[in-house]
Amino acid sequence: MGLKRIVILAVVLGLATSGLIYLRSRNTTPPRLRVSTWSNYFPESVIQDFTAKTGIRVELSYVSSNEELFAKLKAGATGFDIVQPSDYMVRQMKSLSMLSKLDPSLLPNLSHLDDYYRSLSYDPGNEVSVPFTWGTSGIAINTAQVEVPKDGVSWNMLFNSKYPRQTSLLDDMREVFASVLLANSLSPNAREINSLELAKKQIFQIKDRVLMFSSEPKPLLLREEVIIAHSYSSDAIQAHAQNSKIQFFIPKEGGVIWTDNFAIPASSKHKLQAHAFINYFLSPENALITVRQSHLATPNKTVRELLTIEEKGDPNIYPPPEIFKKLFFLEDLGTVLPTMNRMWTELKS
Amino acid sequence: MDSKATTSKQIPVTALVFIGWLFLMTFLPFLIILGMSFLERTPLGTISFHFNFNNYARSFQYIYLKVLFKTVWLALIATLSCLAVGFPVAYHLARSKGWMKQLGLVLLFIPFWTNFILRIYGLVSLLGNHGLINQILLSLGIITSPLEILYTRTGVYVGLLYNYLPFLVVPIFSALEKLDPSLREAGFDLGANRFQVFWRVVIPNIKEGLFVGSLFVFIPMLGEYVIPDLLGGAKEAFLGNVMVSQFFVMQDWPFGSAMAGLLSALMLMTLWIQTRWSKTSGLRGGSLNA
Image 1 (tube, rainbow over the protein chains, first blue to last red):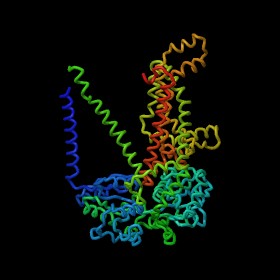
Image 2 (cartoon, chains in turn purple, green):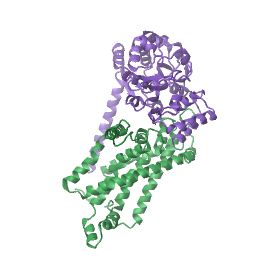
Image 3 (cartoon, rainbow over the protein chains, first blue to last red):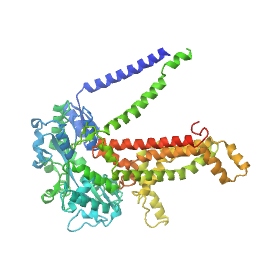
Image 4 (tube, rainbow over the protein chains, first blue to last red):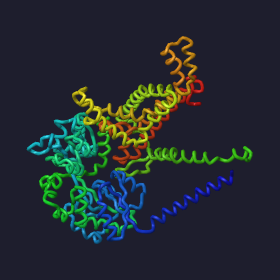
């Protein structure tokens, strides 16, 4: 019996060590870039092209939220060379020194970026991040069933919806508060308790009338279960591609703008190759392919010139200046955030 | 073969695996949660190693207690619905013979070979306004406007009932299986009618099976968050939803952990009460202890 146990133990230990050795050898040999991204984001062809041209192999892994990415990096997940945080997450990671400073001399294609995206409030001068796509939050409307008002779409179309049982709101506390605040001509980043209480009261009045809260209204819009949806431009535009009656609007009171960015974690061991990767995706021809696949707006001014008239002329993807200046980034609310979360819980309890 | 004395001194491999598994999969995660619950979230969203009890104090604020009571209420109603449907199913299954019994059991579990999320999405497409059920009822003229089930509390109940039923049926079924048929016959011989036999002979003998089955569904329902989100339209937050949002939205792992710790305590208390109850209720052997 004793001998048998020793044999089993030896076999287990042997397997474990050889497994570890195998994993180690796999990680060290050819330099590969580990990219953490959202699903359905990069066209495979561009990545294969990148590998063919530079010899740098790319390994994609997917995250489903900024918070998940944050938790992974914070928990010490090393080995990521490129991450794709949204604007607010760049701010958070930057303030915690989780991102490495970018070297502009390695990113000559930065010159293609529109000036606006080179001096963003959360990362002025692209110190640690490079915007890759941007979009807005607004309202998606099924224009076959809902008449679009002549004087423009207002946030009140959500809150005083004529079709409450076919209306959905984003299941995102910040976005819902921002939209109600905007409807009241208040800042979407309001921190005053009175403004927040007012917003809470109004959300409470509508939350049982609307059909549901959902952060993925695309399938609901396509099934026509929902005909007015609080939506990210990305979802609405993808729905539009399948049903042209579904249109996205940035309300006249203004909306929320967001970006997705490239950044290099401080822990990356392949920073040179990571810069090459970012620079590659900034080049107009590659950025164009990506933009066409995702239907998202590009911060790349050269690419915008390359788009067809219809593509760049869509005011709901590229809003005209008078609307654009009414787009706001969601700022860090600091100590007000837990208060807002409590209100959100109260609303749903 | 060695003598028994030497083998009993050694810890068998099975025990090592057993203890190792429990340690890695139950004990260690629980310790991490417990430790985390005494820490603090910084305004930057990181975790500071500042030992404090604030998270527990926060958990007892009115709003979170309200969510807790609502969650317990929901789980209670859903458990009773499961009993109402599950008991007849188990009863009939236990009284069936031969291949019918085998087939019934297999059919009961076949849906569960499909992934949980897929089954919930299946319900979404069945229950919606444009879903199969409403479309059929509408076209048959039984209803004139679609039944609002999806994205309401009713939708949540339907999802819970559908998803947890087998876990309640099996313990009751096995308790009924072990019930000696001669007990029922004796009841009839002594002049009891069908109801009396059922109420005074069958029920007392499977009490524990009923209780265990109910707990098997009640306890996991307390932490349920996917069903309220997908079938309730995320309009109501239950305890699971509030906890999940602390981890995934608020980055407040310490507060989420404190709530998770308290919920675990509540679950253990329920189990403890059950054990105490079954000890003092004077049941012989107990069908499930056998």
